[in-house]
Each structure stands twice: as structure tokens, then as C-alpha cells.
Length: 102
Image (cartoon, rainbow, N blue to C red; front, side, top):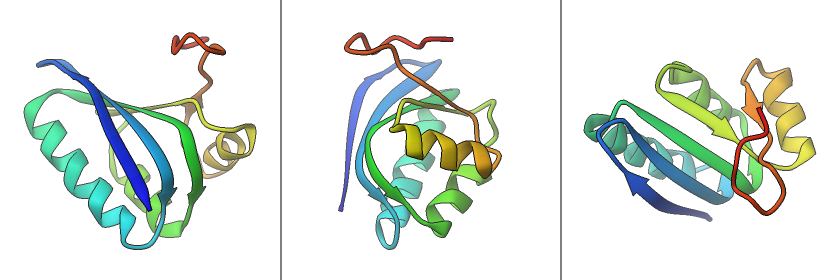
């Protein structure tokens, strides 16, 4: 199961908190939402702190978006290592601040 919470949308960016799994049928749900948000703004920033699992179809979806349009943030150390191994950049978040460390 996936949970998506949009924290703010402007013409420039939507900030999206993702929790649960980016796997199976949930990938289609995320893909539809990303398509809608990117039609409304230039880029989406995804906070992955609540993500527990990403399967191969989830990785393909994340790869399909250019880094110019999708920024990945947060996630567990394991998830960030997986993303790095798969060639996806995922910046950590500062503890309890929601601010990017980079």
C-alpha cells in the first residue's frame, strides 16, 4: 500500500511525501499522480522517508523521470544505498527539520 501526501504545489514545484511501498500496483498509482503534478508544475520533490520497499517496477518509474523534473529526498540508509546502486540520486534530509542536507 502506498500513501501520497502533497505538501504544497506552486507553478515551479510540488512537494510529495511518499509512505509505504513503491511496488506492484502502487507504482501505477504513483505514476498517475506524478503525471498530474508534472502537468501542473515544473518539478516534483519526493520525500521518501516513509518508503519501506521499492521493487523493480518502482525503480523503472523513478528512472523514467529526468532529474530536471524529479528530485528524490530522504529515505532510510538502505533505500538511499539502493537508489545509489541503481543510479538514482537520493539526498538525505536533516533530522527532524525536513531540510535537505546538501
